[in-house]
Every structure is written in C-alpha cells, then in structure tokens.
Image (cartoon, rainbow, N blue to C red):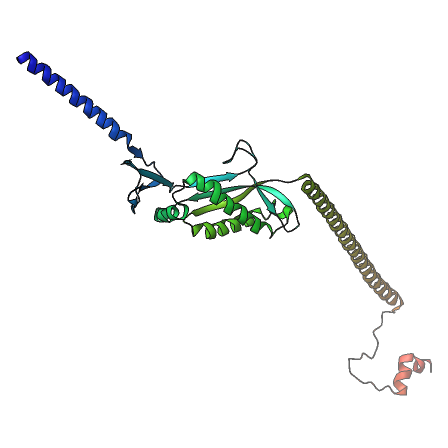
Length: 301
C-alpha cells in the first residue's frame, strides 16, 4: 500500500512538473523583447491600441495582440547606387533636376529617430506599419521630393561642389518640416555623393578647363603688372640717384669756383687795408681832397 501511494505521488509530481514546464514554455513563447533604443506599443485585436508607451524590457504579448516597436535611437537611411550600400541593394540614388536642366543621380543619407512622445502619432499616421516599411516608402518619397525642390536652386556643378554643404542644410530643414508633422524626427540629411552622366562630365571638364585658363590668364596679368611696377620703381630710383649725384657735383663746382675766386683776389691784394671801411647801411661822402689822397694824386703834386 505504501509502495502504491509513493508511486502515485511520483506520477502526480511528474505530471505537475510536465504541466509546469509546458505552461512555462507556452508563457515564455508569448514573451517578446523591446530592445534598447526602442519603445513599444501593444495593439489588441479586441481592445485596440494601449495608450501606453513601453520602454525597453521583456513584455508579455498575448493571443491576438501585436507588439510594435519604434526606434528612439538614431537610424540611418542610405539611398545610393552602390550595390554594397544602402537600404535597397540596387540603383537607389535620388535623381535631382538642377536649374541648368541637368538630371544627376545623388547619393543621399538621412539620419532620423522617433521621439517617445511621437510614437502614438506615428502609429496613427501609418496604421501600425513597421519602421522598415515607413523608411522604404514614406521617408524615401519625402527625400526624393525634397531633394528635387532643393536641386532647382543650384546648377549641377555647384550642387556637386561648393554648394553641397549649403544644400544639405536646406534639405535637412525641409525634411524636418515635412516629416516632423508626421512624428518622424530628422536629425540630418546630406548630399553624400553623385554619379553624373557623361554629358554632365563633359560640361564639368569644359568648365574646369575654362576656369583654369582664366586663372592662368589672371596670374600672367598680375605678373606683367608686377614687372611693370618694378620697372617703374627702378627707373624712378635711377633718376633720383642721377639727380642727387648731379646736385652734389654742381654744389661742389660752385664751392670750388668760389674758393678759386678768393685765391685770385688774395693774389691781387697788396696787403694794404682800405682807408675807408663801410658798414652795412652806412652812407659815405667823399670829398675831392679825400679822393685825391686815396688815388695818390696829391702825393704826385
């Protein structure tokens, strides 16, 4: 009897353990993870959407219930012709028409996320579509439209060169305005690369050659101008040097002539001091007798 009871107890315990394991397995199969950097929403077929945003954790998803997750961390969407990059492994670059009637394929990169406060708005706007589907349809369409609008403000050469940064900022602002109303936060957008057609490449080459020739001509003109200024400066300096040299020679000649005149006067002087010496501003009256005395006529008499 005791042996029977023990056997029954073991059987019951085994059945309970099996039921527990089965129940735990079934319960565990209904558990889903909301990964880090995401939030979740639960939608019940018979009760609708729970107005509760669930943070990253393991959550029970019952029968006829769907868990929708949205990224709150930054995501990137790449639209490019590179087969090894981008969301679609094929020609997926955005064709942009510029104001010079050129159509050029541009690689465009978008960075975005869903703010926790906008998760319910995104769900209502897109009827529970997965973020991957939203990215491949809604965001791609908005990017193409915005890039076309921005492209008309530039020519192809500028958009592929110096204006690319400015155009990227404008693209970011336009997408923030358009997609922000739908609950999608755009963190940045960039014209990352380009794939010009042969005709555009020919035009670019011709424009580069023209600008190069123009720069060479400007450089040669500046060199000629510099040489002219150097020649004028040199001629002016030489003329001034000649003038100074001539002035110094003339001054020296006049001094020499004055000295020679003084020497000649000294040679003619008899060593006698004139009896009458005048001062500046003084008037002298000479009588005949005085004149005779000076000239020596009185002595002859």
